[in-house]
Each structure stands twice: as structure tokens, then as C-alpha cells.
Length: 284
Ligand SMILES: [Mg+2]
Image (cartoon, rainbow, N blue to C red; front, side):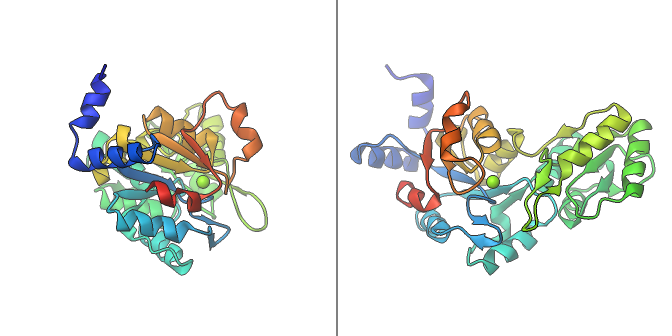
């Protein structure tokens, strides 16, 4: 008996039916009309492209599959990231990248258009907030928005704490407590958010993964629907759990943080586990 979900899928664009039919013919039930993919640990690692990532992106383009590259990192603008990826041999355009800074600015402009904010962060966040119509100020702002930076200053953190005490709403772009670097871990947005939370007694609202909001905005942007979209990530505790909660198919690739031996320890599982994106080219 067809469920309402089956009917909804059948009623979608012709392409969904074609993909479904192709899947049946190959004896596999994996179907995807659109793809969301994490960046670090999936397409690149330690400044280099992961082998086969270029083929995966080429396959998405060839098949005309809408896709977006997602990252929790709010330091860089999409343009900066596009340039970095091009430098590694990955031809990903600015408009194909979705950062937690862009998601945060979109969320806040939905909530309170034209509001004001005090931003602790770098160009990735300040330019996203500017572009979304925010006034950036350190005088009685509606929001304090904390992002990722490599130069957290005691002065800026003190200012943020006092503004939150004064009534500003506390937002953070991403919950990651550390970030990778060749020399070892770096303190990241989530760790500094804890510092401010301890000082103010106020917890931030956090927009980046694992908040499913990252996926919802991303899917809206490319006209994708959750039941025919796949999320590819390298972390069970962020990419897979939040993709699953947003109703997406999930693929865990073992080229990043989560190791094969750890997968079964989690109380949830991805739709598929693959060594890397190189093994996904045939599924596009
Ligand atoms: Mg990752």
C-alpha cells in the first residue's frame, strides 16, 4: 500500500521518477535528487582535496544534481572558501557554498529584519550580517553574534558579556569547541560561547550543525526536498544526526573524524557508510 510519503515522492518532478527507476533497475534503493555535503573531512582535509572529490563534484554537475557544500566554519566568506577550494583543484563556486555565518544571518533577518548586532567574528560573519541588512554596532544591539575567529580579544569578549547583561540576545554561529590546525587543536566558537555563557548565565542559540536549520535553509536555496536529498558528512555526532533529524538520507564517509569502528556505537545509523566520496560517484 502506498503511503502518503510515497505519493508525495511520486508527485514530484519527472526527474525523481527517473532516478527511482534507475535505482530499481540497478537493484538498489538509494535515490537522491539533491545533495548536501560537508566540506572538511569530506571534500578536503588539511589543505588538500580528498582523492575523488573532484570526480564527485564533476558527477553532480554532469547529472545536473542541485548541491551545496556546507561548513560550520564562519571565519571565511563563501568567496574566500571557493578560492581556497579552487586552489586545491576543486571547482566549487561561491554560490555553491553555505556557511554557518550565512545561515545565522539568514535566520536573524527572518526573525528580526533590519535589527542591529554586535559581532565578534571575521569577514565571513560580518559581511554575511551586512549583506542581510543588519546594522553592526556596539551600542544597545538587538543581538550579540559570536562567530569563529583566530584573534579573540579580551576586550571584545568583555563587551559581548556586558551587552548580553544589558539585554542583547546571544547567538553563536556554531557549537564546535575546537578546530583543526597542522599544529594541533585551536579553540573555536563553542568554547568561547561557553566562556560568555558562564560569565552571563545566558546560553546562546546556536545555528550551525547539528541544528537542522543549516539543512533547511540550504535545501530552500537549491529547491530541494528532504525526502529526496542526501547529506554526506564525516561526523556521526553532527552531520549524520542532524541530517537524519532533518529527514534526509545520510552518508557517512570514513575520510574524516568518525572512524569505522565507532559507527556501531552510536544509537543511530547513517543510510550508507562509504570510504570516501570517491565511492559515491556511481550513486549520483
Ligand atoms: Mg567535517
